[in-house]
Image (cartoon, rainbow, N blue to C red; front, top):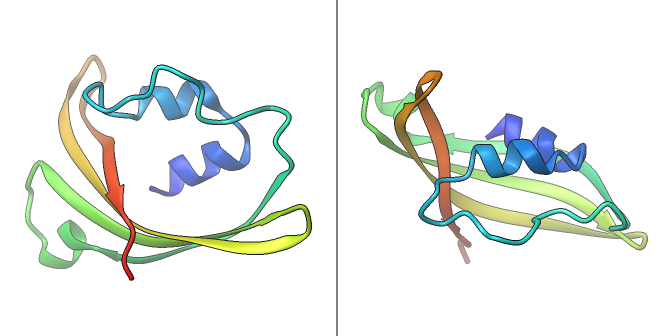
Length: 102
């Protein structure tokens, strides 16, 4: 999760695409080089697998990312779902999708 946040702050499209699960990976770019967005911070609220100490192939990470658009502060609160699957580098976590808590 933290590495994907960093990729968003650096507008690293290649890393975001590589860490997105193929079943939900968008065909279009997810970051725009011209976007006037300033990332302010990331707070990871929970990671179920770490808390439960289970070696499963699915995990959820709840986070709040703060950012500013045209001087206005905003926040993204999401519960992201990740799957661990084989890759050429070995087992790897891939972002699948997310939900937005109330």
